[in-house]
Length: 209
Image (cartoon, rainbow, N blue to C red; front, top):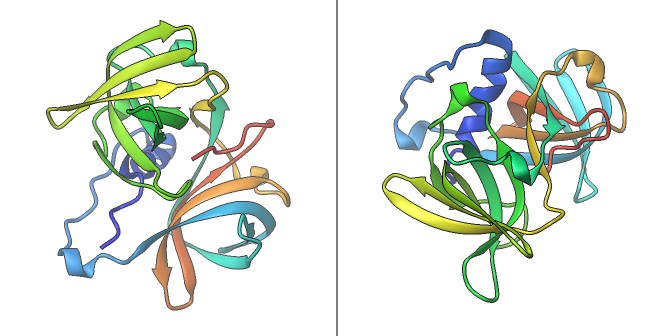
């Protein structure tokens, strides 16, 4: 079973619209639909369908579920990462040991603890996603190394200079224009991807996850 994708982001998109963190009903593991990611550029948006040209070059129609939520990302900086922050970091194992970040998402304080854990991710082959609290952040010659903690475990992740660092920001349906880059956590359905949330790039910032 593929793990639920970026649960904190899912909660965060709802929080943008409702200022609250909804609690999804518990389902048996075998009842959960398979989760997939759609990454690409918008071709068209019409009502309940978002047509996307994926990074693999395929054009897919994403059905938007009733009550779907929309958000964007805004630029942040590695120096914004402080002990106590809750972050989502996609990373790859480094040749010299440890992990190196591919991107960092700094979550709003209200989302601290949501989706905590570390699991496989598909941004790149062998990448992982870690949603965790920053225990410490040390600036070094080659960027910053953060120690994050989750479920009593710790993990050190290097954040090289130039790594995309973002936070969640508001968006409207007017931002769903052709060419805009999207990241969509979706469910695999017989009719194609079914989405409850969409993350769209705007103002030159694209979802890096």
